[in-house]
Structure formats: structure tokens, C-alpha cells
Image 1 (tube, rainbow, N blue to C red):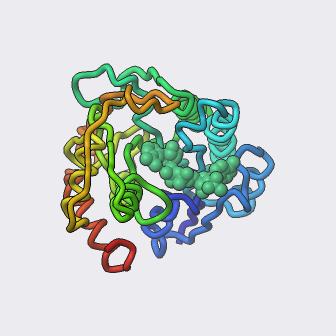
Image 2: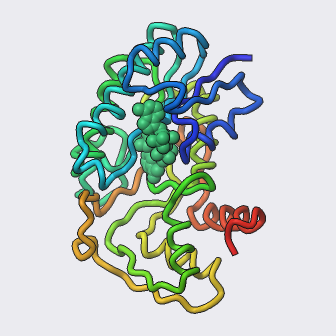
Length: 287
Ligand SMILES: NC(=O)c1ccc[n+]([C@@H]2O[C@H](COP(=O)([O-])OP(=O)(O)OC[C@H]3O[C@@H](n4cnc5c(N)ncnc54)[C@H](OP(=O)(O)O)[C@@H]3O)[C@@H](O)[C@H]2O)c1
């Protein structure tokens, strides 16, 4: 059995990746305690000792708003961490699989973004993730980079849990209705990574669930499916909510390249959210 190393394995996506690939590879799932990716020596040690065929690099600085005040830290983890991991992968002949974000785009497009559309990040987080991509391309030409967006899943915090928590406390919700993207089930993203690997894909791909939505649409959908009583939900404009980090107002990702490489059409976000809520209900995580 081939070996796979997963960094950031305690995170929202890292845990899904481990679930998806367990049994397919001999896994080593590590996080900050075992390897701080900003330290080249840590990366050298874990990759040199384990000698994986594939490294799925999920470790990242993902605090989008805090990054505005901590840009150096975001760059250290995202750009330098990716460089360190990619360099050791090249040294040891391992394939790097890693993840990018729609926040590298500025939102001015009027059609879904293609993989080779120009990047123009608006935020410190977006800049750090774009620089991570550039470091990856320089250090490890043999790579698989999957850009995605608006992840939800059972592990860690996510927007859906935040909506359900507020509704459960009877608090009114004001939710952004002028940012358009697509909610994506982390489980589907992990499955997409497997499909791309199985197809021998290399380079950059976009993956999200199918369709598009605003955060308001997603909140309304979740409430309609999971909360029986009335909840006060009202739309808000991004400018009214004064987030520290600017976000692209439009960041739907075109998935034609993914469909061609794998033959798979991703399922729609409504279907994925419905399955997620059902799973959470069965586990007793939501009412
Ligand atoms: N979540 C989304 O909506 C989204 C959308 C598009 C792309 N992505 C990308 O998907 C990937 C995974 O994101 P995620 O949502 O799973 O993030 P996450 O839940 O924040 O997980 C990231 C993991 O990396 C760890 N980490 C942070 N700094 C580290 C360091 N210096 N060395 C080693 N590990 C470190 C974190 O540990 P601590 O918790 O201890 O800091 C955490 O376990 C990232 O590349 C992200 O940019 C995410």
C-alpha cells in the first residue's frame, strides 16, 4: 500500500481527507504539534522519515478577517509553509496535493472563474493563498492544486453551524445577500480530490458543489430544512456589515476542467447541504 501524509489533519478539510483515504493508503495524519509547516526542518523530518508517495497539504492559516492584522503570519503559514512542504516533496519524489481559494479573485467577473483567469486578491488571506500557489508552482511542478470555496462539514466551525446556533438561541439573523459563490461540502471536495488523483490529474482545478448562492440563500435554505419554528432572517449588504477583510462579491468557480478530467458532474449544493443536515441529525449534532 502506498503512503499518504496529511498536514493540517485536525482541520475541517484535513479530517475529511483522512476519512476519504483511510484504507486506500497507509496514512500519517499530522497537525501543528507534529509538524509546524513554517519550519523547514519539521517538514524535512516528517517527509524524509515517512517517505510518502502523496502529501495532501491541508495545513493553512484560514482566519480571513484576522489575517488583515496578521498578514506576516498568514504569509508564513500559507506561502512559506507551502514552499517548505513542496520543496521536500520534490526532494523525495512525492506528489503534493493542496487547496486554494476563490479569494484570490477580485469578484469583478460576470461568469464563473476559470482556472487560468488572472488572480487579483482583495484581502491579506487571499494574497497569502495566491503566494502559496506561486510557491507551489515554483517548487513542485508535479502537483495537484484544487481551488474551492465556502466549505462546510462536520468537523470544526462553519457557517451552517453558526446559523443553527443563532437560530437555536432565538436570535435574529442578518446575513450577507450580495456575495455570490457556492457552498461546498468538504466530504465532496475530499471525494473530488480522490477522483482527480485516480485520473492522474496534475495542475490547477476548480471544485465546488454545483449551482450558486449567496450566504443569505444558504441561511434561508438551512433554516427551512432544519428549524421548525419562525426565525427572523433579513438580508444585509457586505458594506453594511464592515468585515475587516474585503471579500469578492462574485466568486463562482467554473468546473468544466474538473468535469472533463473526471467525468463527474458535482451534485448541487442544496443536495449536499440536505445530506449534511441529515447526517448531523443522525449523530445528534443538530435538532
Ligand atoms: N474553509 C473554507 O471555506 C476553504 C475554502 C477554500 C479553500 N480552503 C483551503 O482548504 C485548506 C484547508 O482549510 P480548512 O478549512 O480545513 O482549514 P482549518 O480548519 O483552519 O484547518 C487548518 C489546519 O492547519 C493547522 N495549522 C495552522 N498553522 C499551522 C502550521 N504552522 N503548521 C501546521 N499546521 C498548521 C491548523 O491548526 P490550528 O487549528 O491549531 O491552527 C488546522 O488544524 C486550506 O488550504 C484553505 O485555504 C478552505
